Image (tube, rainbow, N blue to C red):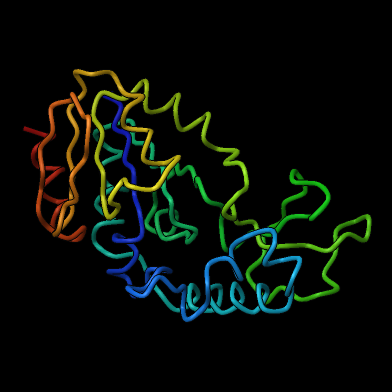
Length: 227
């Protein structure tokens, strides 16, 4: 099977009713990003950070995968599909995709503040006093600004091996995720699905823009690849 690597961002989840974190004024749900998505924010106000992600986690219980998620899952019948997502929801998994790599962590997981390999599935609110087996506080399993991206090396390897690349719902302007497309073989076709596609600079790959939202564009992508 040909290898299809799909890079997804907030645009695909927005169609399921999940708001993109960063609003037009630069705030995340009314909060400064430094207050809720950095190690310093955690140190300064742990309760605020816990509440912020608890609200996001509750919302995730209410939403369902959309057609874009579902068609990507169906494409596993025809391609070796690896999804590399910047999203922290589990909508790809809910839709049936079996190989999903989360660059920025997962809302339904938590980890120890002392041991980054101590990770638990977690679908309820996380509170101060919820601890690991050694008594260390648990934190959201989210990659905050200023932290390393543990999954990046695997993402680079997957991208290097791709026969096709699709970009869905992300402007590919935020690093390190934005650098992934430059890791691909230069003759690998790239399909960019976005109703308002941003400019992708310094790209030598064959590029086809599909100016649609995810629910429409993924079906178009599927048909193009199966021709």
